[in-house]
Image 1 (cartoon, each protein chain N blue to C red):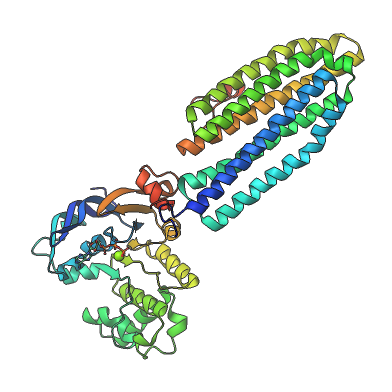
Image 2: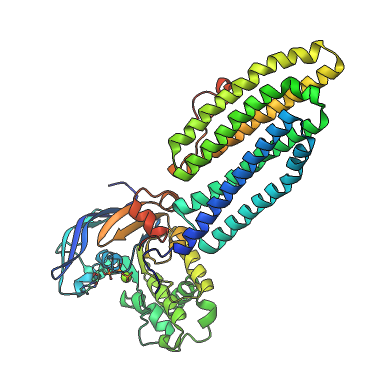
Length: 253
Length: 236
Ligand SMILES: Nc1ncnc2c1ncn2[C@@H]1O[C@H](COP(=O)(O)OP(=O)(O)OP(=O)(O)O)[C@@H](O)[C@H]1O
Ligand SMILES: [Mg+2]
């Protein structure tokens, strides 16, 4: 495995009962890069994303074959501490899901669970995480109001802040900007640009422009298969596979 | 009923129109050279003048292609082969415009010289025009067929045009030195004209390179000049 690979996925199959949602996926995900997953609805992007921090474990019909290594360690081995895995591999979901508690408590939920109690430290985490998520200015005067009282786009950024507060190594984002206005979208994109210096980012997006703008590597999925993966510059200027070309140019009927 | 079989149908129509505009531009360029041939063969100054006047139409058409390309980029955010097609068309149109500009230079040459003088060099100029026209037709064919091999043939045809130029150059150069002032001036003007034809061929070759770029997604340089070849080593 190359030195800068975070994940190494080999021959991954995933079944929901009888239905095979992922077919022999093999890919490397590089550290300190933004990797974008694109593909039509239902092709398996979210399913695949969830295999990277074992979120699929929560669905009891799911069966998995193949291997996923994170820093050379098989994450599906019996002795793996899944809670620790999910701390290292943070996730922002397609739909914002703030906890029914204050904005402040949402952000420090993870750090507190890790045993941080010092108020000053927690305050700092709250401010830096909310700033990083481009939400600070909008909420700094109502940190103790409910997270549920925010708009959809603000809730999404709160969830991003909550994820950042955990100081994960990898951040998985499932269409994180689908509910955001263009400015907030650009802020989140800027944030990813910044975050990738320290973290590894994997993002699912339906916006070709977003994938083209922010990602270093793009992976195109179709009906559970990985069709093509490569340098984003290549994929958007001269993709190798006709299916990729058809999809990104919108000729996919 | 909406037909969902091609979600980009209207964009495809726009791309088609853009290609048609480029074809129209090449037709205009070809037409200009055909008029030049008539003016040269039959000493028709009014036909030459018409070529000069008509240049505005060609420039306008080039501008229209520019505008349309910019609009399509802004509104359709094209990627991959769509983007290459628009960028290539944009660059091809500016090469075609230059090719047409040289026809205007030829028209001026015809307007400036009397019949007897024009007759002296008409044959060699027309030979080069005929060859140039074949190149333009072939390059447009390669564009419509998206055929990179055909495009490469245009580059080979350009070498023939280069040879036609250098072959005549030596003779004309002799004349500029040895004969009367009038004859020398005419020979010098003719050298320029032949040089323009040779340059026009280079632009057509550039168009062929655009076709190859469009098809293959890589940048090509078909004809390196022999001087460049001699002084640059093969690291490129
Ligand atoms: N919990 C589940 N049980 C059974 N089938 C599922 C489940 N979740 C997803 N699927 C199926 O697996 C396939 C992939 O779904 P997935 O959610 O990964 O697609 P996606 O690429 O993320 O789509 P979208 O872009 O619409 O979010 C779909 O056919 C879907 O119906
Ligand atoms: Mg999804």
